[in-house]
Image (cartoon, rainbow, N blue to C red; front, side):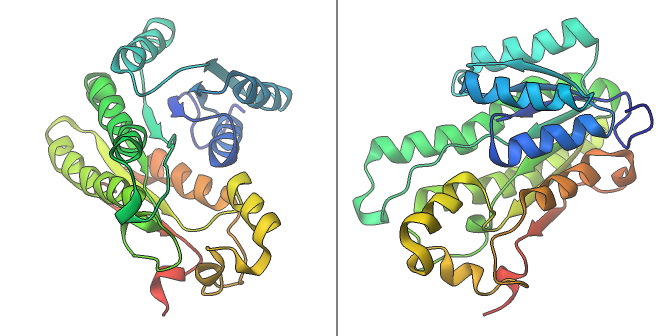
Length: 258
């Protein structure tokens, strides 16, 4: 733990409870970071803490925590500053979309998706910004392949709108971050082997709505969430000190091939 790529860094990581968040928390702690995590699900977050600590990593958890409330975010960020004196990285992993065909999606579900995929990124970035500016820190946002390419089989218009906005916001914050030394980058996963995707295949088999996307990947399978975590690790580390405003797509080539 003493010689990792994130040695000595304090990393704020949202959505540590499962899927890519858990894998990222484990990897970052293994690379020497102190992970300050949060999640809406207290039990899942506690399991992540158990796994990370069993491996010798340093991790804290605030859960349950609703990132849809700006006051919660400010308290979370402020608490990290009180305990550690600095924030080096903000990693915006958490998201909670709802899906329905565009013509049928309710206004309530649309607003819910925007709040829980875009607004929480905006507010976390804004809350952490002055602290990141003080140390020349970095932001890593998690976008999505949905933000760059439409999918005929997936009813994901609200999700696509939110993640497309996250990608655009990343570039603008990178531009504004130049003046204060804050790097801002984005990783956009494709279809990954997360619990919801695996559950979809368990229910529908090869008729799963994501199957046509996975067919275009390099190995014809959902991606390993660790691949996304490794991409985020690079962007969070000092190895990427000359990288800002970038958008790294981790989708097995699905968006590059018809």
